Amino acid sequence: MKIKTSVSIILFSFPFAALCFANRGMIPVNPNIIIFEPTQRAMIAWDGTQEILLLSTDLRASDSTLLLEVLPLPSEPEVKKGDLETFRKATDLINSKLREAAMFSKRNSEGLSEPKTPSGEVTFHEKIGAHDISVTHLLDADGFVDWVRDYLKTLDIEEDVISETMKGLIEEYVKDDFTWFVFDVVTLGTETVTNEPIQYAFKTDKLYYPLKITQTGEGHTSIELMILTPQLLRNFPGLPIKRIHLPHDPITITNDELKDLNEDMFELLGKLEEMRLRIWEIEGELKFFDEDLIAY
View 1 (spheres, rainbow, N blue to C red):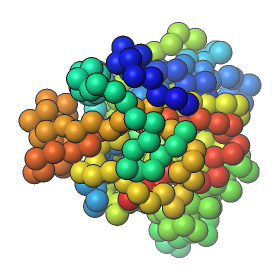
View 2 (cartoon, helix red, strand yellow):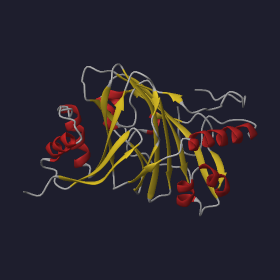
View 3 (cartoon, one colour):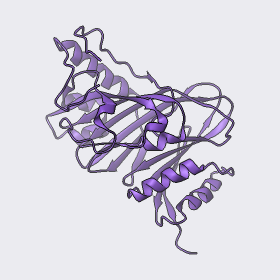
View 4 (cartoon, rainbow, N blue to C red):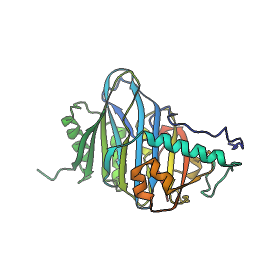
């Protein structure tokens, strides 16, 4: 896509449209229910050893239902309520920086173009607004999916919602040494609601965003991620780099500007004088997301 030089063209405003599920595996307890996710928001801050992932979605269903969301993570997360204002502030900051630029480049230095021991344990369980969140730790790969099924029954999910597709994906993550999973049960109705943003902080030596887990859904999706790192990233061992589109030049922000965006992200990266902030766009059929987004 040719990047236009008119600064008024490249203005971003979250929320943005998403046609399907794009960051977690989503399973309605009632299999006859259709889940709609017209809006999703995500921002990632990574310093090389730790990541903060801020997620928020607008959701509705064709009828009232419980929805189970599954988020695989490379290490145990700290979970807390996030701030929706972070997205607005970050978007405003990007737009203001872009307005100052005289022209935009199609490419950038990242090279982006268009009685026995249980099988798991619950280390965190808390209700945050509409979310009923459980952080679970894999202890034994054998029987972990069965343990998950049993645990979900304690959350009043009696139906066997772990499909063969989801079971296979969980087993793939386990083989890749993922031992932490977040299960989020949300009650949905026919009215679109913006769920409270949830913030996850976890250790990882690579920037990470789950995509493979979305194969439980069907259809086409568009994903936009706000990425904040000390420097631009060059290595993409997971999702091929050609699947990621950079619609604007990365902007440089100062630690003072970051402090106004998000206090936790400032704690993570604020020791640096400058950082790089940009938006990544990913789209395609969910069934073709066979790799997660990994970069460093």
